[in-house]
Length: 412
Image (cartoon, rainbow, N blue to C red):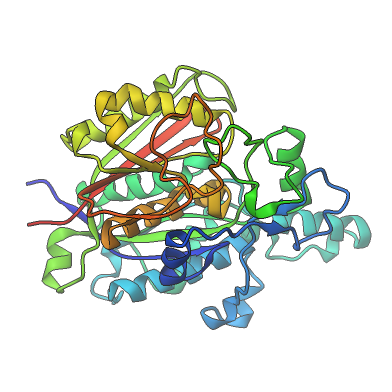
């Protein structure tokens, strides 16, 4: 008998707010979280804008002595995990701990800690490097610290697949439940790399928007006048649970995870394959994994980065959904949050789940003059209400790595 996987909890930390309700309210209102960079002096940088998390205080959830052992992406993951567990009503106990796992991915890891400790080394010498430097830096410590501080003793691992990380994490976690390795998984992505090297590196690659005089209008997926993505930061985690476990404890069920696809373009280290073949095939894999008819998808939370790849994703959607593509609602919430890199798939899965739960599809803001190559219904500028049955979330990363997940309204 196939083990079914449902979502029983979720939480988000993003440029739009801290916590699930703040985030879902902000995306439904079409609010932008993009502003001037405050984390460092960016006055001499070609890019001076980003989507920063505001008002975050880890001490509400983490003891002070533990805070200093973690970099920011780990803070976000631990706090988000604790909020998601509270949302789910699931309590980790001695009896169930070995059946609860953690799979929290990150794209770049502890870049702030790396920069800070390198400066300390240069100025004060090797003896002044913090003994916590390596645990602050390495990618799997988001999962590790979540496990330690929640008591989850099941599978504990980490996905690092650039911009597809969060989606791969959720999909892979669902597989662990289906295969009987766990009953509950804390899954998603976390990221915080708005630093000199982070911004400087992407700027050197000509990947970022330079619309510094209009931060809130800089992220404009599918728009003719888009000029690159805007960096963001944050965390999005879901609680995945085996259906019988959820039913046994009377859990509220947000949705069922019914499809997951992953593959590679095998084309270029940063560019997507120009015909959209890899992305299209990944969407087809997700549909096929759940025996889903493409006509049953109501809404797609697009990867939609505000780059040239928007046209490629559009092409891929039309390739998969054929005539149904014109009936789909497609939107990019990166227009409001910026691109959260390794956390993007996690936060966007939550926005897709929010649309499914509340019947409110978030808009693509700043879509004023559509690119002629981007000719789908991107829900421009204003959210729309519609009862949805099935939603898809796309993530495509550097290295040609692709991930797609599908959720549907839960029914017995």
